[in-house]
Length: 388
Ligand SMILES: CSC[C@H]1O[C@H](OP(=O)(O)O)[C@H](O)[C@@H]1O
Image 1 (spheres, rainbow, N blue to C red):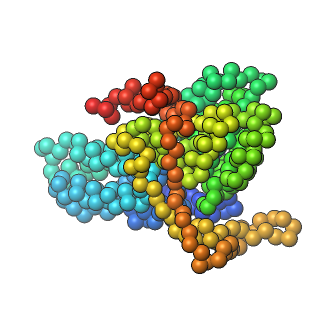
Image 2: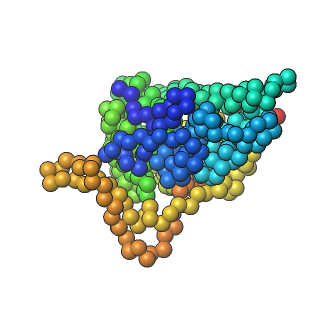
Image 3: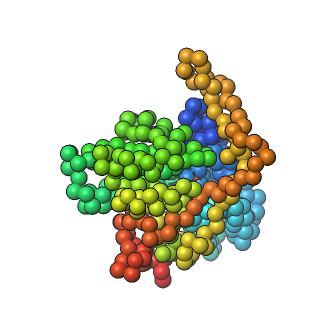
């Protein structure tokens, strides 16, 4: 049974699942312009580093396909495309996949051969190249995630020599599954592969306050696919490790990434760093699962990563569906309630940075990277083209 599709696309038409309504309601918004995509990403109706990049690229592609560009002449057409991509880039700052997609698409349109073509022919060739490149970003993502799953499961098998009698339990944070990508997922993709290969005993997912990607999205994906799983609050991780690590063979915490920088420091959903500290304290492996599009070798350390600050209402208010007296969920009535004094000060960073010292492995579609004798991660062998 396949998991939920965050993104539905055919040339000229993009639909995005409104993740703010999950898990109670499945509603797709049609996204046909960069403005609609920007709002969808900013409001986190779609979220997850790869999904953000895919939606931005495809929305720009759909509007171009539908004739939004009135410019003529190669220079003005490229200038228009740049302006749409630069606008989309501003929607959320921390995840690097969006920036990488923008750079790829800008490079693509500049590589189109237009010598000897009329202005109309050149414009058509540029738009065609853009659309094909944006569709390739979507197509490549699922293959990437399956590869991350395979490399991650292989690394864990090497670490623990897993047998039927020693299947492992893992924890994951936030949502890194089909709702954060085009399918299968990154960290949750490794969990899916562990389950497929008969290596998984159990999965724990954290609630992931304040947006609740874990309780609303990951729990839904795990239940949807029948993966044995338990939900805990973010604050329960320490007690879980201390009381149940041995009994449940808790072997690893597996998280996604919004940005991995040159030394391996990793920005991910807020609450990731504390899990890394706990994992180290309890002798549990800490793994980052991320496509190479999430690796930013131009940034030296995690101190240089811009951390998105989000609105106060995400902490002081929550929304959800009504639970009827008989326990059924009434999806026709969504309520929003205040859960704090609305005058209280709020600090709401969307992400934190886990120093590379706390990370045991970074799993990508090109292989798993571990620290060298210098105690640092090195990506030169993984992505030589990025170091030229
Ligand atoms: C494969 S998704 C990567 C990353 O994105 C999530 O953040 P958000 O839900 O705010 O977009 C989370 O940090 C995931 O680990």
